[in-house]
Amino acid sequence: MAYLGWYLLVIGIIGVLFLCVDKYKATHEKWRIKERTLHILEFLGGVFLMLPTMYIIRHKCKKVSYFWITYFALILWCAGLYALRSRF
Image 1 (tube, rainbow, N blue to C red):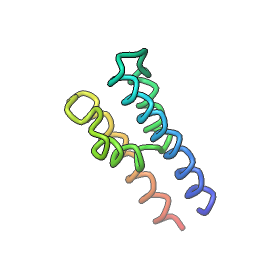
Image 2: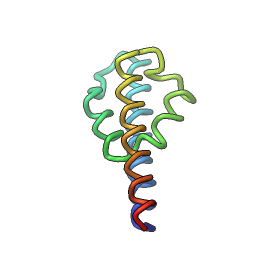
Image 3: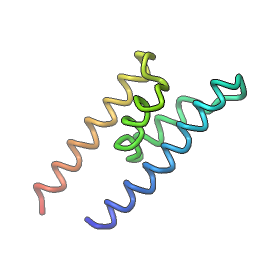
Image 4: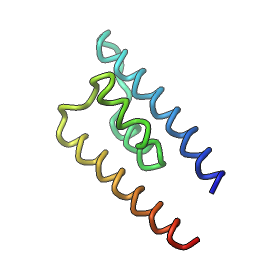
């Protein structure tokens, strides 16, 4: 379980960095990071740090399609972690 915690921390930090870079690029009208890339990072486990960061830096909060996919990733991860925890 300790390795899972470290993995989630590292992938979360990577996801936050990608989200912050995308916010910077959006405000400076530069080439953006694809939403697909951000969603992949969320589904890999970065959702736990990326979701609060979205609201803190006010990025992608108003886009409904992005919002639903992000919360779907959160629900999947929570269900998976609950199932994993109940096994051990």
